[in-house]
Image (tube, rainbow, N blue to C red; front, side, top):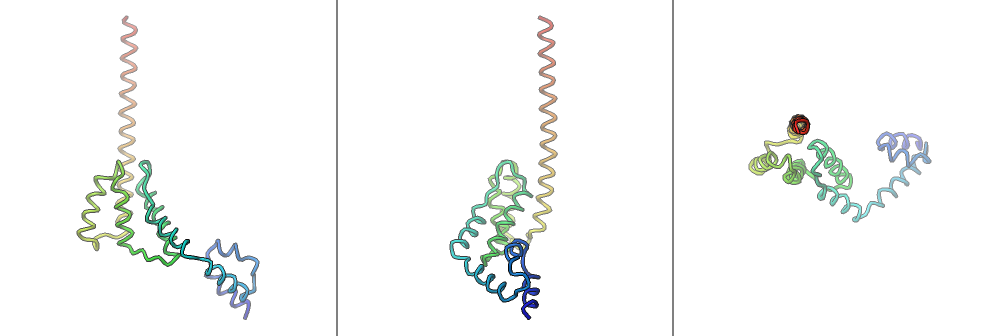
Length: 168
C-alpha cells in the first residue's frame, strides 16, 4: 500500500516537486507528510507576493506583445497556484491596461481596451494572442523598413559629402 500511495502521489507532482522529494522514493506515507508540511508553509505573505507580482507586471518599451503576454501569463499562473482567483476577463483587462502606455502598441491597445470595456464577452485570450502575433509581425516589418530607409539615407548623405569634398 505504501508504494501504491507513492505511485499515485508521484504521478501528480510537478517536476520541481518531484526533484525535491526524491528522498521519499517508494515511501508514500513519508511523501504525504512531506507534501503536507510543504503545503502548510505557504503563508499569506507568499500569496500576497504572488498576487502583487501579477498586478505589478509591466511591459517594457522594448518588449514585444507576445513576450509580455507570456510573462503575464506566468505571473497569473503562479498566483493561481496560491489559490488567487484570476478570471480570464480580469487577466485580459490587466494585459490591455498595462500595454496601453507602450510606445508602439498604445493606439491599437487603447482601441482594444475600449472595445473590451464595452463588450468583454467578445474577447478571449486565444484571440488576443493571435492579434498580438499580428501586431508583433507588423512591428518587425516596420522596424526593418525604418532601418533600411535610415541606412539608405545615411549612405546617400555620406556619398554626397564625399562629392562636395572632392569638388573643393
